[in-house]
Image (cartoon, rainbow, N blue to C red; front, side, top):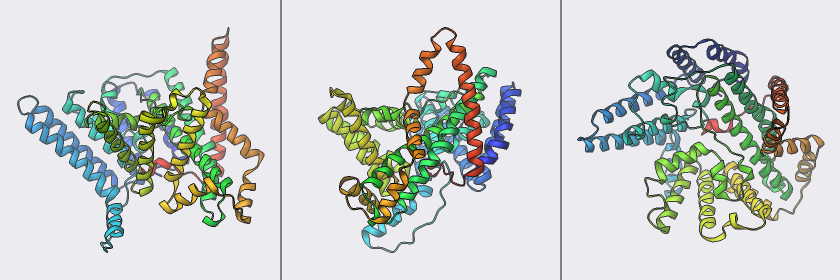
Length: 473
């Protein structure tokens, strides 16, 4: 991890709070936030920070060049855009996919090419997509070129969303880089959002993660239908609370400083189709691929066959974006196939019995995340097979299943299901509409925040298991 959770919570966060509370001048605030962001990244990536700075410099210069030759030199601008895309994709290709490509080639052709062991820079997929979208938007005229390199550096390296998103497009915060304000109410709201995200991570995702890891550590012969489905449901909850928790923390920290980041999740487990799921899950990545891949390929404007090819291309790239493994590729294609099935064949949104369509969507998501979580296609096949016909029960498999049947796990699952739906939000909204209800709800939110942060601190003090899933993407 770039920063340990303890260092961040007890040292870095108070300093950040002091800056956003006391520094009113935007230029001074930008300078301090940029310095903090670079320190944040360099703490765990002292070498790869040079790579990030080099990437920013190249994209900065290409965008400047594209802006200066706007108009009559359109061929030169096209060339500059092509160079920028090639540069960024090469950067990703070398650091993220070189080993995967060589090992796959060796397996396919039986060759013995040495597999390069290149350490993966944390957050490279996020900052590469942000810099590339900036240059594309300048080329399209969606936003103006940023001549101040420090502002562009802050946009790319701002620590709340640098290493695990959400992916922020430059034109969404272009104005905020030079003109923003914050007040006590905004800082308090941002802090509450940060605490909610931290609680998702520490109190839910980590606990489900330990359960899932325990099941995946079993020998394949000890798997059965009970533990396989427990792992599938557990991982669905782990990855949601892990990633949405980090997104909540990033949005909250940004809000404290006067930045508005897009929402990255909208209760995806309430979806009744895979199409609806992807409108609610990792929204910043979905919109990025729609704007910069799907639409340029033609979108749905060139017939059903071309639309289908475009959608499958997007989901293939979505899978690859998550990592250099065949399980990710299969996961992306799996979701692409169901997108096409829903568009042209089964239409679950039109089913009369909504619980059935919801059950269908969650089953598909659970199967997909089983593939996503697996360390190999073989392991994915083992788990999927046991989810369908795993009615053999070894002593170790039964012991694992029985160990999960505790009151604590039942309460944990109940809390997770409630937290994954808008139930609490809707109840709070109804209570706030009552006479004197708004004040009561606000007080309850602050009280809940204090309780949650206390629980997080206690969890942090006692726990050794604290991975962030999306750091490795």
